[in-house]
Amino acid sequence: MKVIKPTTYNIGMSISTTLTESTATYSSGTTYAIGNQVVYGMYKYESLQNSNTNHQPDLLASSTWWLKIGSDNRYAMFDGVVQQASSKTTSFVHTLVIGSVVDTLAVINSNAVTVRLKITDTAALPSPVVVYDQTIGLSGVVVGDWYDYYFADPTVKRTQVIFYGIPPYANAEFELTFTGATGETVSAGEVVFGMLSDLGATQYGVTSGIIDYSVKSTDQYGNTTLTKRAYSKRMSAKVQLDNTQLNRVQSFLYTIRATPCVWIGSDDPRMQEPLVIYGFYKDFSTEIPYPTYSLCSLEVEGLT
Image 1 (cartoon, rainbow, N blue to C red):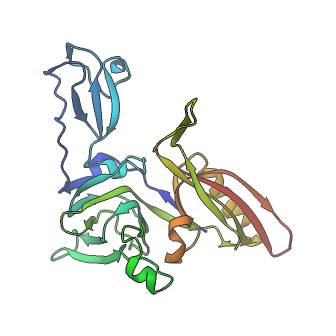
Image 2 (image 1 turned 90 degrees about the vertical axis):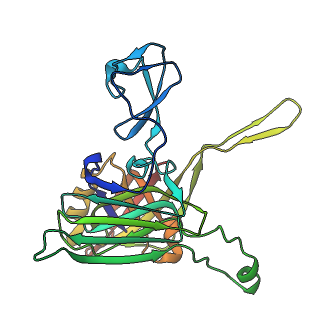
Image 3 (image 1 turned 30 degrees about the vertical axis):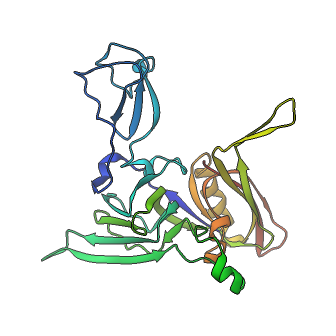
């Protein structure tokens, strides 16, 4: 079990992008009518009143004037909402300078054929040097037999990738390239970067699933209507760790309480969809049954 404790994103980290946003940028000198939408910072807002002038959308004092309705498409993949994605047809590139050392980057809920991470040390002399360049494919579908090979649903594919072993360059440029088939909508739900911590060995017997927030309603005649809504992943796991690591792991878990992190239950690509979750732990407990090792039980719930 590994955990990426995220470095907090801010909009100043992004230095270029090929993503676009159709909603107009907020202007303090413009008068907005009820229902008008604007972009301010990372987010989109809708005017709640007519004659809406000089009310900065992100201020608490403006809460009766503006309603936050979503994220700017250019920055949606950094907003902490897994199913609110940045998207563009065929491909897009986003470049950022994080400004601190990170060793792992995860892409969650992505629709793409490949994701490439290229990191350039722009301070190198006499010219910039590429210090990391890896491309990971998401299009492979695991098949069980020849029938699946020919007839399996081609839309069922991996949605998340993890880039490990990023070298320690605090001010390097991180260039992310998402590529899909021609004409296909390519998207990224969440990009998370930070330092990786190893909690111990995940034991067999892990359970995983989802919490579905879809609405199911049945009328007086027995007709059922289904309204699809967001969902979140969940995982229950036991982790074996040496008792020499017990203090470190316990202290680490204290520090990330109520903090969204990327939880990696297995490095095996066959198990990444159910066992990689961007979310928080709801509960953990530790059992010390032997002099040399302990068992830590974790309940992890993903974000929607």
